[in-house]
Image (tube, rainbow, N blue to C red; front, side):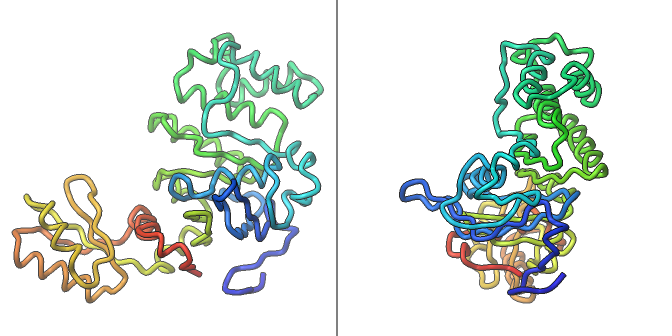
Length: 321
């Protein structure tokens, strides 16, 4: 590995995804702007950003479903511009919305996907998929009647039926209960242990911290790409928890103070954040001298970090490396 322009460069042979300069426009909208991404084989890579940031467009370019207007690179060793068919045959892609046939049963959906991939031993493949995802008892149930968590399992079973070596999961746990989310992540970790690389977009911070690394984009630009454990020190954000009866007034006063970059509500408290630790401390203590507040210095978590990174469009060109 060598350092190049402040980013960690890896041997291309160790990478499932190695793309650079990816750019895509839709009319006047620049959806993805000069994006580079390196995902090691076998890693679980988090892909984060607000709605409309370009995550889905990037995933579709990576898996060969959408041709970039500019850029180059390889996915699973295949040219992202010239060998999209080879890439698609080796990738499992789970879309944001359930996209299988709701009028078919679980088994019928799996059989259909197996035929699309022209798989040998179709019934054996379907039986194994049902077993791997715990779907045997429900295999005759109509897909449209499933809960969100069971639809998610079915979608993941369809993604894995052709034994892909790369999973691209676009907000796969949106709208499912916490138990189903935990079960989903247990399965992703098992796939990773068996060498399957996963690029997963998510809005849940408790899921993001389970990823080996995180890439964060906003308004089509990549703002951060690092190992998850390294991100808090890289960003250098400080935080205070503030409680009290008049938090609306407290937030209004705090937002006007030097050193305060943003104030956000977290349950019954507000979190006050900034990168200048001394100025932030003075701001919180000054307001606590005006209002009866309970204040406590805390570690900035990933939710605070990502609120900070998208607090304004002016930060879109600010690169953290």
